[in-house]
Image (cartoon, rainbow, N blue to C red; front, side):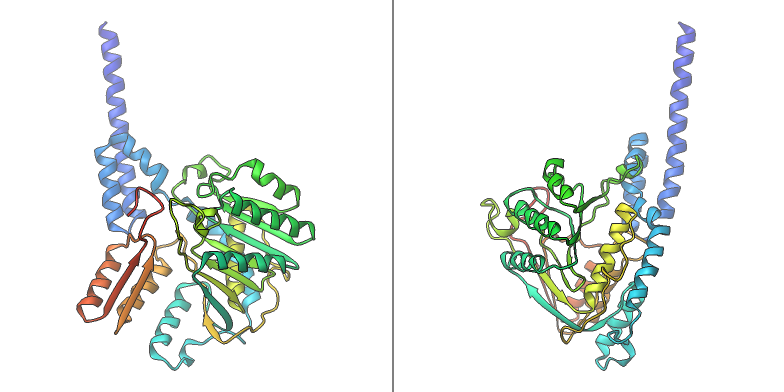
Length: 375
């Protein structure tokens, strides 16, 4: 009896000791890896300390950025190769040559924090009707001659998703090379049965995380929210609209759906292609950089534009830096339209500061959220 009590006491002390050791290691890890967001650091430290071992497990599952570690070598090689197709200076805008001081400062910032650069010679259509957006996407797919690349966070296997899938299958049978990248959590309802006809038609299908390894399957909080379509390297679409009946207003519980989208033609399309190429390389290991996917640049209009992708990488967030800088540069008005608004404190302070100095600040949010746990 006494021996059993001694053994039980030993194991209790061992578990407690391991718990303290894990806590000390993880707190140091948090302090070293979460420097960019002090609020996140404090939250994780409190979770690890107060919930003991379970808090540490939560951090290991949700708190570690495995995307950055996996991309550190592979993405760099892809980026360098892609940049060789964008070395032409004919359409590149030099910030110092821009006359408007505000545009000059913003272009200089965007050129330094992103792997892309401002370009001229673009044609861009601002789309606010989701039915028109889908119609233009289908029209571009119908006209495709060589390649179609699609990347979506949510693709529903409903009538809208099935119709677009069948159109892609028809184009694949015509000889068009098609690659389809979807987020495995956002597009959770895409079954093997739904995707099988695409694969049988020769369409390359891949998912963005969970990865192949057990470690990567833990990264369920790191999602790919992009919505991208690129046709022949000439026409691109990106914005807020996913693929599904609800985005066309067919879901009666949601009713009218409003999402902003862009149709892009011109040099900037290749920057959109660069984003897809890097994501595809990450998901599959296949490098798709060639003359077919990155054709010769063609001037299509007079608009200046630049693609700046967001990603959970590095100590800086390019999109956040640009927004923060733009808000601080504002002198007359700031208009923000977003479906979800959960800004970091720095952005809130910037908006408050702008309002106090007399800038007309307006924030437009969704009248009804698509998810019950958001407002």
